[in-house]
Image (tube, rainbow, N blue to C red; front, top):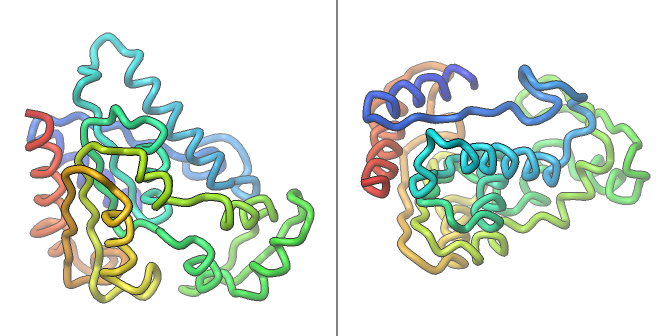
Length: 225
């Protein structure tokens, strides 16, 4: 939800922390086709954004953090692994077992068929929360090649993982979040919130305003000192 990210950006800015929010290719205001998105492509987009910040003269490259949510949490884990110089990382409800998660979201039959199809073959699947989406088989092929736990193992910087205890998408919790900490060596923290996957944002800002945003701002403020 773009409004959720905008709200967090305001909270970070109030604490003196600038943020860069990106749309992956094919989504939001970016160019490209959504059907052609892949996890690897999204990781490459995130790396490009991180490298852009590192190249800017007005950025303190010793204080660049990573924040990812859900599928973006999977991407964030891979970004941290490929850019271990990141000062601190926080992942909200990160997907840690993509094959399990997306078999639930898109249907195990669709996933099984797509795994053996040509990379450019389109598959339309109903979403577990309503509606449908069309993705090329290349997206599904990445389900068995991306490895958030393996990626985070090469990152030794501070890592915080936030999980909702009433999750129905990235499950089971808190075990699904803990797996990243099990593979991570370094300062780390697991934050458990009595919430579902979207932090109740669809009906109320309370959990985000009172728990999620403050914990996020505190994590980065502490490590950017």
